[in-house]
Image (cartoon, rainbow, N blue to C red; front, side, top):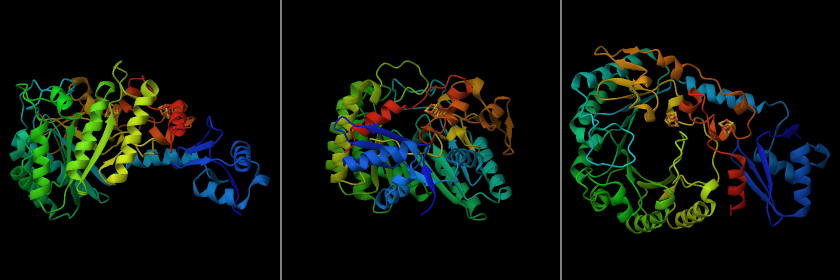
Length: 438
Ligand code: SF4
Ligand code: SF4
């Protein structure tokens, strides 16, 4: 039998009905023990490491789930290694491009400063292409280039996107890298003609955002002139579904807060009804989080609105049974991650229409956070702030000691840089999730 010890990332919780619930934040495994003989043994083994109590059955299950690990392994070192490898990796180049800051919507919570009526000019598009080509030529490790189109509403600059993708595809005939592209759109202009044009230049991944069902959505996400948008977006999606036979991925994202969670139920029902059995569509329900600690009072979290979140999550779990790939990304237990967001990646940049470069998408209206500017020859003039974002920011001591590190990898980098870090998750949340797991 391999020599083992309990993982330091085990979380044990005795539920009200006497079961022992075990979760491992590094492997993501969750286990419910309901037989007294197993519960007692498991507690002693996992809390005190008493090898004499190991029996074959428990040993096998516990090692498979990562609750018991090889005695020589150093789990914290493994997590730090993952963090560093991910930060330093130059296998994938992530570039988010804002081809315009204009938007046809006027959403109350938008963080992009849309009052600047700026489109990206061709010299900047060409500069980004040169930047990518340089990376393709110089970086032998580079495997994939991922372009995310964001804005403003990127489809207001559709011709720039098509031009850029055509040029990039041409360049790539010499280098043969994987080029993937995601278009993040409000969906209002995503009619079948535009969809076909974009698909032809290689954009096969889309994210379309709803804010709940019709009435709620139309209140929050309306046109600049106040006109509703829900029906147009849904019609666009249904037309694409019927009229386009090829492959693509459209992820429908719906964000919710305390006052909009009820409307999500109607949205799930509507999507189940309309998109049933088409695995080219997926749906992601995300509670808006107060990552920056701005004191938003309408947040729907397990801490503040446990019952609401848990009933909603159960409804999603039930819906998944009806349509396996329709609803995802909102589960009762958080999973281990490699990074909290792309801001932690060395090779990830966000480019605004005027060529300014940022690391974090919530900073794009804050000039003090510009990390560089792209020049016409495809190089970047870096600012002093660059090192702050892209230098190797080490994990804090308290994170290294924290049992939840594999679930958040230190959390929001912006907050950490401001020495104002807030934990995005806590053990009470995990035990609440465990209590409600079925
Ligand atoms: S940010 Fe908080 S929850 Fe995350 S690892 Fe650090 S101390 Fe733990
Ligand atoms: S650093 Fe923080 S604010 Fe910026 S994108 Fe990441 S999570 Fe969001």
